[in-house]
Length: 95
Image (cartoon, rainbow, N blue to C red; front, side, top):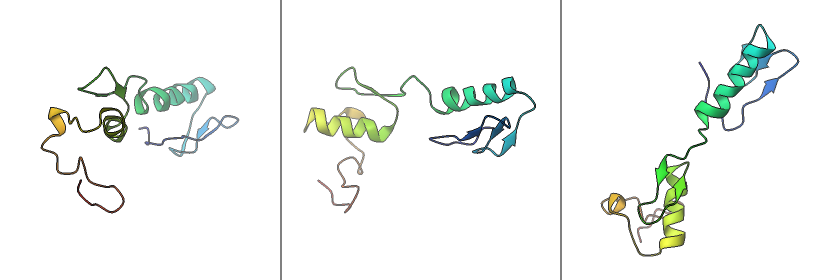
């Protein structure tokens, strides 16, 4: 099992994943585990798509920030009924 982490840590000399607290029998098995952290946990392909332009994003918050910054008052259909879309993340005031 691979533990989620934005920045996984490894001890390459001991073939040990500090993030998952796992030791590996060989350098190649440790490298396979590193590959999982890089590619399964942090996919190279974005999963959130802007409905208003060809923009692609890795997280919902990146997509929302993009829409507010680049598309102004235009709200995508998928977010029109979302009560949190135009809510301040800091003071929770609705806009």
